[in-house]
Image (cartoon, rainbow, N blue to C red; front, side, top):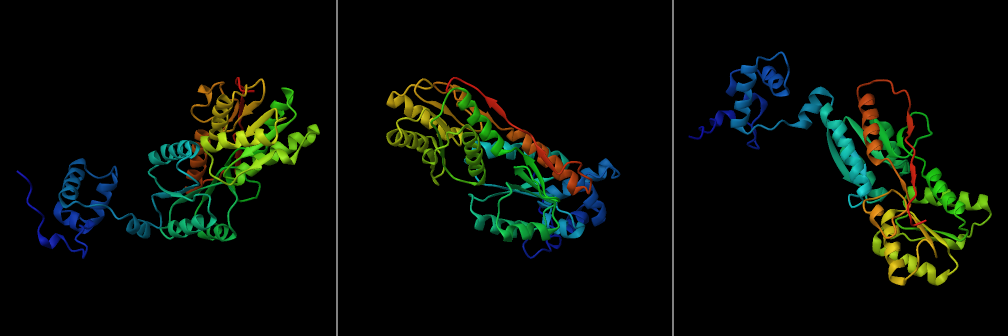
Length: 345
């Protein structure tokens, strides 16, 4: 038989939602005791905890995180801003962040910026108004308004995917320039000299990879700016195939292609198959990030493996320390990268 509904006297909110006082009255305890029981405080008698939880369940009570934050000056939420959810790179990073923060009692408020500074500014204003305990943002490049919002918020902040050089700025990532220079030097060591850089999206990290590519080729004395293909469209396999076909039509002497991301490179490999362009005999093809499926391509793709999960984990751990007021021994952590050589180069 269902329990009878609580009396009207226990529904004092204009919204009809039960309050902590309602739960305390139904359980026959003080509001402070009810709060401690619902938080799982060890000093509360288990039988009393069960009674309070039963009352909360009967009333449909849901804690108000905003009220709790105002009362304690501490939120249980961490805001995380990433550029895209359609990119597996950021999904892996986010999962690692959540897996680290959840056991410590924090939940994530996720925002997607779509690489647009105005969207990031709006998300920061919205989330910071809710007084989050901490903030995780992608990269170091953002508007002056966003920097000021973060700096004056008093909220601990850690930057993802890049390493910081400014004192007081915390970051966990890798050198995009060094990684791009490394894979370009790999192509040079394989005897390639007409090496193109093909990029989409053109976010700050993609442009940093372009700089690493230039440095390697300039040092080798074979840099040709005409072999840089920079397309602002979002990266995809379809775009990669189109850009490779166009590149070979305009520059038939190209003997290697460095794609800024693996989805472009995967599309490039499929286009090479359709065009009967032998890889790596005719052209070498390399990518970046070692995304799912790159090892299954024909031929398997040479790429840079980036430590996305480790970046998410260590950034979340750094943020936890900052939120607890603990000293952080190293404000900028470079987790490096791995050159994964497969048959495409």
